[in-house]
Image 1: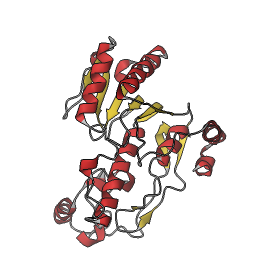
Image 2: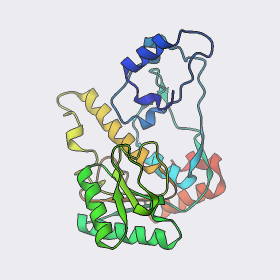
Image 3: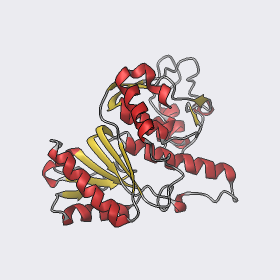
Image 4: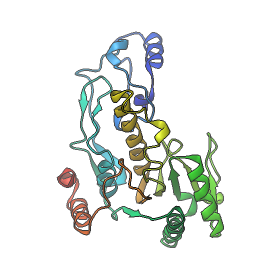
Length: 276
């Protein structure tokens, strides 16, 4: 069972009913840091005992060290669990790949950000990355549509990816929402519209005054959406931020911080958390 963090209680009850308890009865893979739906439950509450039988997978084969470091920064100080109610941490996670420092840039207006997106996509293609190896990701469908239009206005092929349809490679750059990119992988990913207006999405948050705990859970889910989007890129990633700045995003890194991230990636995976 993959993507275990997104199953809700009814799913686990069904699985337990289908598979009698025994040695090696279920093989479960999940990561609470990628929980993008509000399905929190303890496995032990459904007769699934993982205590003493679980193993943390810490080696990342998809993204570069630099992308992993920058993506972990997006999670902030939020606390996550091990799918059984116990605290989980990211210490020891590492990547075998090394590459360029991910870009993070602020923009004064949406138009300025879309112009920069076009230039970034053009630059990636000039570097030899094929259009269908590039994804543009946004929190909402409206932002996704705006990105597609901006690329098409610049005479770049682009297609919006919806539902389960898989576009043909000749349709160009693939644009989609943060929910849709879950489980996919691209050489380059550009994330747009992460200013406070869209990230976290106000309509996705329970008012803090109404339910403080649910508000915190909603905010973690928004951070996980951003984390999932940022880790879909294998070699190149850019993050565009509007104004005002979002509470989900760390400050735009200084030159000193960028050098520190580059050095951590260059020296090897053991120093990954030295820069966090």
